[in-house]
Image (tube, rainbow, N blue to C red):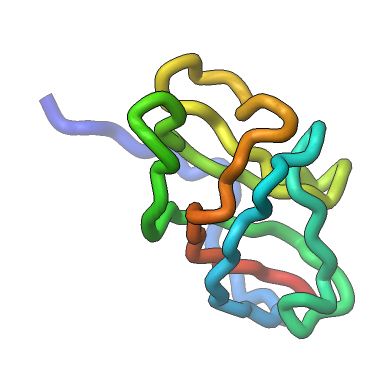
Length: 105
């Protein structure tokens, strides 16, 4: 059986800017995520962002499953693959490199 799709919002042309960048995380993961600013991406406002893991699972003990943008806090939140929970505060993620696709104005 094939996957089915149900469009909830029809495609439209939007006046927005898009930036693609590499983001290297910190050596001490912050509580509630790593803060990012629109200016780091050449923007005034971040509308949304998607992250892809380029490389850097720190070790077998801390594999990274995903990263996502928390617009309420303006942070990148990182999820541990084994626990499916956010990475613990203070974790060394300095070898993790993300590809960020950021939309904004």
